[in-house]
Length: 594
Image (tube, rainbow, N blue to C red; front, top):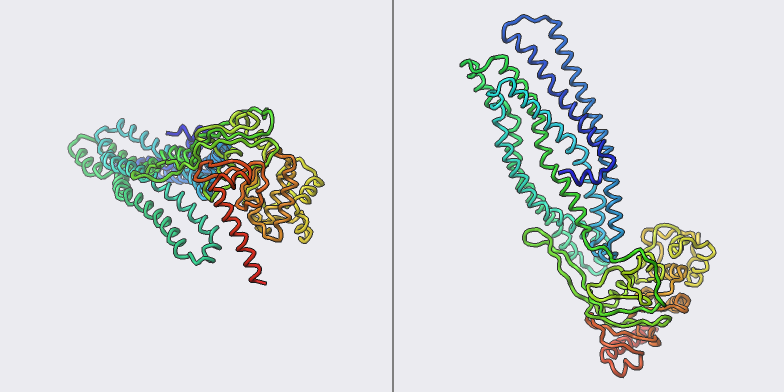
């Protein structure tokens, strides 16, 4: 039951054992006052004379036991909380290591809401189970078991009577546990979906407001929150009736012992002192027994929740080795590559169903070293997916990708990253100085090298206008800069990295006409003597590429230079006409504005 817990607890298992032992002593201190009360009640009932000093010692003993109970309980929980948080630290660290080995694309597909819930909310939810359920559940169960054993030595008939409430309570608890476990899967999936929706709703608030989509966006927001509410209430409603049954019956340990036990004494089957002692002991274990059976259903959740945490990140890790790059050059080969994105949806029984949406179909082409290759096609044709496969966001389902004849899977991710600079449409900036953001391209670069890269990326134009210049903070996710400025900072990173292969995925998407020339100058500086792959919708910008690959619906339909494709490829002619029409529309719009 606790193998997962102890696996992550590691050296802190001893603290969990110690906490359980201390809480066990605390529960025992709560039972001893009933034994001391018996020592006073029994002589009085039997008509035996007792001294006031005898009573005073017992009363003092009760006070000492109660004080020790409170002290030991607090001490035990202090130890258990330390062990719990150390275990959660080890759990988060283990999840983070597993996280790093996963395909980056898989992580992005999960969404920030799911990842945040995993590392924060779901892990935090284990704290109560580790710090309370484990020590208190075991301690509150062991003491009643020991007392029941003692009762059988005192009078087995009376002991059996005191057990009368347990079978019904235990059956109700097991039904509650069985019903609850069936509802747990859909509940957790609904929680993950709600987290993702909330984060998306907040991040997309600007678009929602601008396009008056409040109603549509709020409807999805409301639906996912309502679903989470419904799954939660469905889970609770299934468990509540059975919880009420066992929580009401379980403490009633004297429900048969008192009336039938008195009849046994009258008939001579039992003695009055034994009945009094069994009644006192039965009363003493009512609360611990209720606590233990309150904690017991949550104990299996420890393994379940840890397994659920692991399953969120359950996917095949990237295929890679510890080998370095040893390709013969920096040419790139896509060899019969097929790939599809996986989607996870809840099934009819609440279990996740994984489906694959194939977006690339048997794609093959070669990018020659030192040449410029452009990938063009309509949105959704698979261009960016090819780029992400090259930088090893994912492994292709079929086929292979190689650099200089060396398969990507035959080198480490670090070795691959050293050889490729990837500049995407959206580049993340950390909330630190722009200097340090650029230095991410090469961490051992000097300040002078960073400044030189910034100049080559045409960043000085806006850096000189900022009070603190390159030492200014970028803000959360780079919010202090415009989209075009963020792109130039990302280009500076790539220039500083100076990798032999450059992948530009809509790298000038945010450039306005005034700054587009500067962006092109920065890119020209970046790609000197490099193997270059460009993904762009602006076809005039890639007209002079050494090779243009035309994608349509996930398939490669043609390759060649601009002139060849204009003569032989209808798909390319269609794209070129659309690009020309768009350019003419912009020119006409400017003329009308003048």
